[in-house]
Image (tube, rainbow, N blue to C red):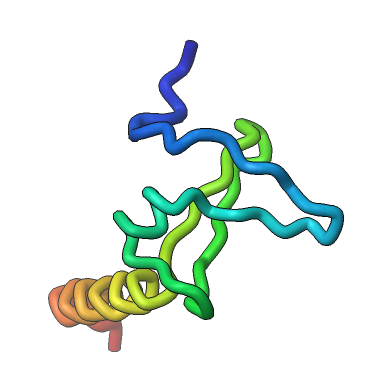
Length: 80
């Protein structure tokens, strides 16, 4: 079987009638997700896999990626 998941299992959760899902307390604690926090949701539909990331962490990741891209762009010669 192809390794699509390398991590820890936090148990099962039920999807409510409104499509709501409760994130297990242990995972919320490990990811520092609190009531009212926003999370980014990523999916690989072909593998039936969903991932969550706190929005604050995603924002930080994008800021760091922007700096790396800017640094790389400065190293590429510009066409005249």
